Amino acid sequence: MPPQVKICGITDGDALNAALRCGADMLGFLHHPASARHIDPDGAARLRASVGARARVVAVGVDMSDALLEELFEKLRPDFFQLHGSETPQRAGEIRERFGSGIIKAIRVRGNGDIEQAHAFEDAADMLLFDSYTEALAGGTGVVFDWTLLHGLRNKGAWILSGGLTPENVADAIEQTGAPAVDVSSGVESAPGRKDPKKIERFLQAVKTTTPMALRA
Image 1 (cartoon, rainbow, N blue to C red):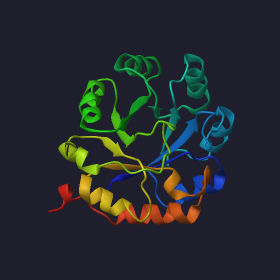
Image 2: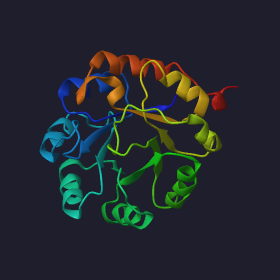
Image 3: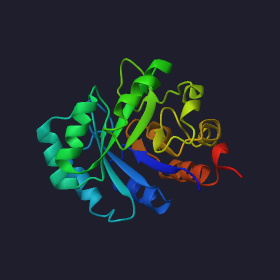
Image 4: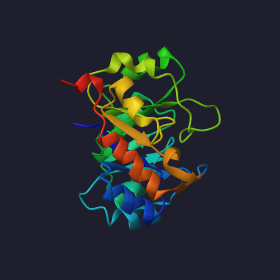
């Protein structure tokens, strides 16, 4: 079974339709004004209305306030909240208990210590997302980190590989890491914040025809 695919930072109907048509499993709407991929809750709700049960919806944010979480829950009914800031395990657990949505906790990776610290979220998050660390950006960096740091995660349940993935390198990433799911944002864009439907199609084709080594017979 190929890995699941999350297309993140969707802001328009063309990107949404391409992701759904090509079989994306998760769609991410980013609620962070500093990002070129920011979309407000009303705009995300309009796009979400056409998703139905065809994919799971992820509301992504950085240290989101209670007010924003409540608004997103009411308007989007997301399957997951993705926490991409400095949220603690306690905060992640509180959000899951309050809203009943799943939790994806993003871990920004600089070295093996970040992988070790991620274990603190095992009881508070449904999935961990491993992304590249940069000082300037919380995500969508287009930067690849050292995939060998993830070798200990093979066959360790639900987690997501992110950070600099593209249609050209995602098959190699899957084969090297055994990732059960992958996430892409800038890697399927023609410009910051502008998704390219053809790149989305190529990305999904590359993933769906690749099997992680850990899953091969």
